Length: 242
Length: 256
Image (cartoon, rainbow over all chains, first blue to last red; front, side, top):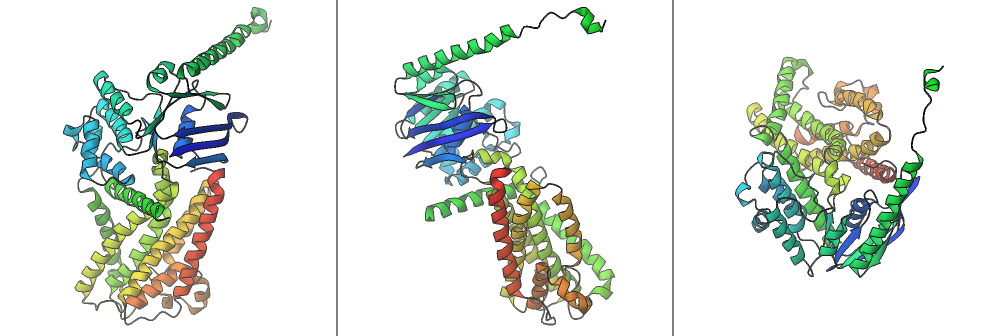
């Protein structure tokens, strides 16, 4: 049960730049995987490729396990429908037709008492919890988390983090972020995304070290041109055309 | 293979139910409005038709004549035009694994079949009772023709979906074609009411075959001089093949 990406190449900016340059990645079920990358380095796109919602034309994706959508994605929720209807839709889509599924997701989202309420009339926090519960509570072999494992109130975050950790080793998860502290706290393996490729580190501390050194180099690269591009003094005569 | 078919069926069921639930969901009795909407359209057209009695062909009850013409047409045209809209409406759902744009199109087509199919049965039974018309000559034939109008709509939609994605102005041309389509598809008239020299041209349109055969299978008093089930089948297969090939060609170049 695994997901393997082979030789993935993807361009952005009308084919001018590489987002991924012959990228290879292998994830096993039961692993707690972190993907560390700078903002806009293609972490979210990589998650979409892993779950199969982003088409890949150059390279191969082999998927022998079921993969969740990147959590917290909740655009599929219909505000004018009740919480129960929204849960049932995802249940039908992924083969959970029983009422137990509805009850389990509602309990995970701490939303049992709002089951028959229109989602639009619920507090944003309920919606946030429901988004997490639908993603993490539906049966998949590998769960994907984009930027945050859990959002919301502190008590719910603690409960949800515990739940996610309890998914391993029967399931696995991939957590893509630029927050190395979260990766150190939650993952066993880390991939560092740099220059369109990923490097796998079995030792998370070593991976984080590599990521931090990259971050420093990139920060220096950004700062340098800024210094160079300080505006040259403009002579008032040239502006006024004298 | 079996597992993937099962998963596909699961996806289609979930999306179709969602389509049905979301229809007029902002109104009370939401889905009922979809049915009432169609019934009102038929009632208005029937009143018009009754006033213009001269256009009713001899031996066919006017309301039932209209019902057997307009319901297949509505099913065909709604399916053909709604498929592209369904993809645009559900674009956000493409971020859920296992869903493809074609799933939305087929789910919408299924929802239309459920809606118009139930209306067809209800209105046809009511009209038969009201006009004291005998039951259809061949019920299976009539059902087959009704389903053919639906499948033709899917096949037509499969062609227009990728075409409008590559060339958006083509939607305008398609809109003009639709207006003529209603007149020349045998919805309000049988082909025998057109001059005979026009028949070879009119019979290029597969929908006129569907409408003609529907009346032949329904009324004992009418026998179509042109309807061909084989031609309908050929059109469905040819258009579906062309549409799916176009979709595959366009998929990478112009994403949904």
